Image 1 (tube, helix red, strand yellow):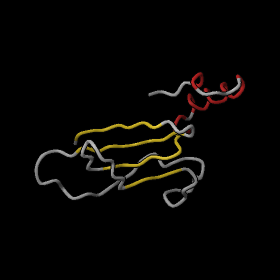
Image 2 (image 1 turned 135 degrees about the vertical axis):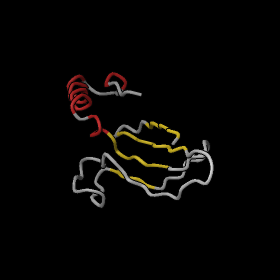
Image 3 (image 1 turned 90 degrees about the horizontal axis):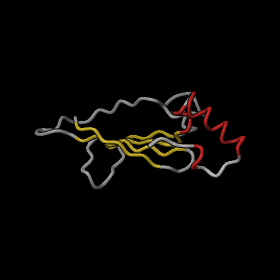
Length: 100
């Protein structure tokens, strides 16, 4: 889901600033994201996460990291569903899954 500045209760000046940030650096609006590498479709179990101001993963306190590498045991049979959850600075949550 794409964030629209019109859906946020901001004055016109702040809506313009938000639209510019969303266009030029959309990942700057991510407050927190996490990964469940073996999502069962019901319960999200975060194995990895990053958030703004966490300098343990990188030296940039204003952004979350853009990539993550997670090592998990090979699944004996079948495929694995990886689920990524992101929360933006306004509290909107997005979830995406991929079967690997």
